[in-house]
Image 1 (cartoon, rainbow, N blue to C red):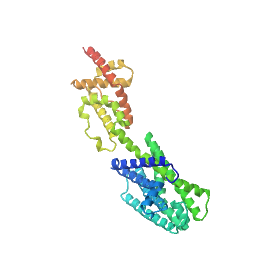
Image 2: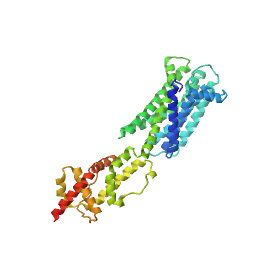
Image 3: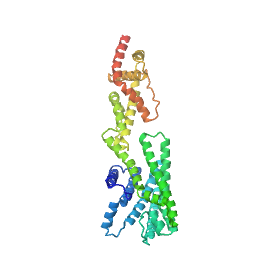
Image 4: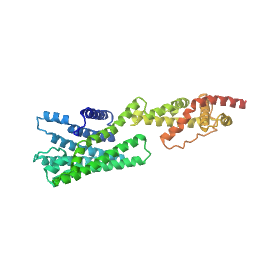
Length: 399
């Protein structure tokens, strides 16, 4: 915000991030992963606001000039420490299934200690009140204090950032090596970009601080100082987009237009007919009992259809198989016709024939299972028509 970003652009962006944070605090707060993302985003928003020139001017005025823009910028740097701690815990929960009970307490203690130490070192660096225009934390430590204080400030402020960046990069690499969805790939790339950016920026600032502490100035220090003014804002925008994706998913789920709901709609004609014949297969658990309700409902629908197929397989008749082969040469349509014949026999009150067993699915993943059943659902309406032809032909044969 201090980097010369136009107000017409920076204000809407910052307002959007605040809206995302508010919505997440209201909607997404039930599990630890969401709470950690909310905490990280909250401290990053605070950091951005304290860097914003208009906000700095208003705060300085309200404080009666007791607070300076440089001190507010220093506070914005300190806000990055708890943000890094929250992101570290977030990355840890992505990587490790079991989390030690003491981990949160250790990280919170580390955040508290490093924040207090960094604040004290920053105040010590500002004590000489030397007239310089750069208000970044590392420049204050480098120009206004001793090299020892500069190194101490780097250790206190940057240690969690290094850990956070490393954990995020590991988590993203692991996710990309799996069979990730397009959204998973986008999230992993975005978070890896933030982690690599933080890692590179922190290393550059450390090097610039060491050089500046010796009293030298060069173009490298000036470039790092300029980038340091707006880098946190860019990283915050990226994290805000990642944090906003679950909100978009919730909105799509509320209107039943998310990908899982649309997949389920494709199966509904088949599901309604089969569960009418086999109502005992319907599960009564509500989707609100799980975190991903839309995916759960699709999974439940797939299970219920498979249970119906298992029950209806006992109503197939071997004497109809020869006629089914003559109807069409497509195996998927034949399966649909067999199922339609069994469904018709069940709803007509006929006794199970016991001729055929259910064809077992070879799929091990939900989407693969859905693909199989969706092809069956695509043929279902036509299969019911063909089933009538097969049934009439079979009755003539029996007569």
